[in-house]
Length: 71
Image (cartoon, rainbow, N blue to C red; front, side, top):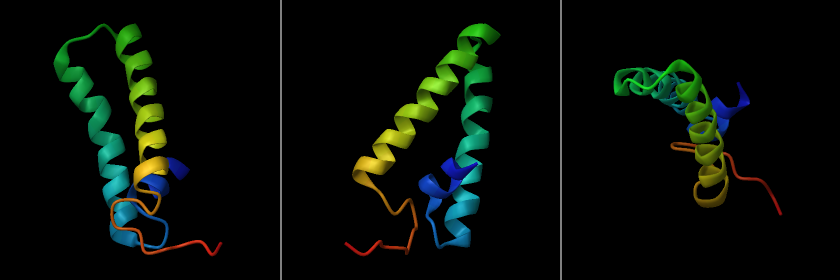
């Protein structure tokens, strides 16, 4: 579940909770669309991967992250 920390933020409890909420709501939203389970499972993995890549590129500290790595 390290994706939760990447999306929410490393050193923030609020960010971790927010990241968990996002990752729980995503499959639930796909369920309401009405896609077959086989397609929804693959689509969920694509969304997770795309979300992870986008956050690493544009928001490396997460939604509310406070941690910054030293260069």
